[in-house]
Length: 195
Image 1 (cartoon, helix red, strand yellow):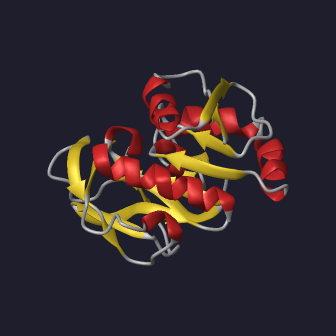
Image 2 (tube, rainbow, N blue to C red):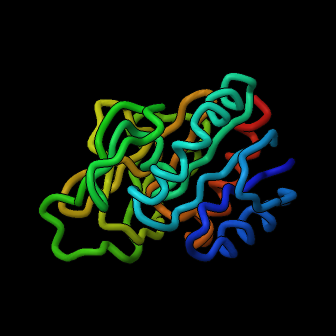
Image 3 (spheres, one colour):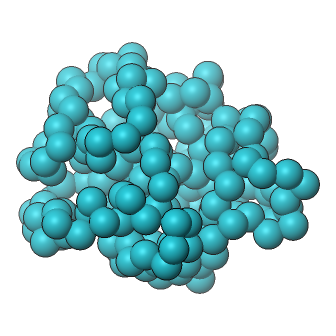
């Protein structure tokens, strides 16, 4: 199975590509979105910078999605799938999911770094075997949305930890840094791609 990681031009893409390779994906990194079994929006950078990068590729991304390419967004990559974000100024997202991305309310301290429990809320094939497990988070922003999250976690507020539809999936946690939880997630991801 081929995964294309979209390179926004910021940050280290090694850990997500290594996680996918460990799950037997063939991985390519590119600054241009194109056809693949899975197009990955990685979790690096600020919403404003990535939102501006996405603007030039928005019609291509929407075409790929309509043509059956599935998408995985990790951390910021998930957040950019929502309508708007406030990191670095109000910026438009891809609007594939309803909601806004903003700072974690009532957080004991920011950023939120470390392991927290993820809880199944609206099960999907990607959440199988993950309820009650711990996953690794590094973030200060979360999605505030009416969209029913497959899984949530809590840090100051309850927030979406995993969202999924037929063609789009997003994790606020980093599966590539989440040990056994990540392994289970990547196996679920392979099955999801075949549906």
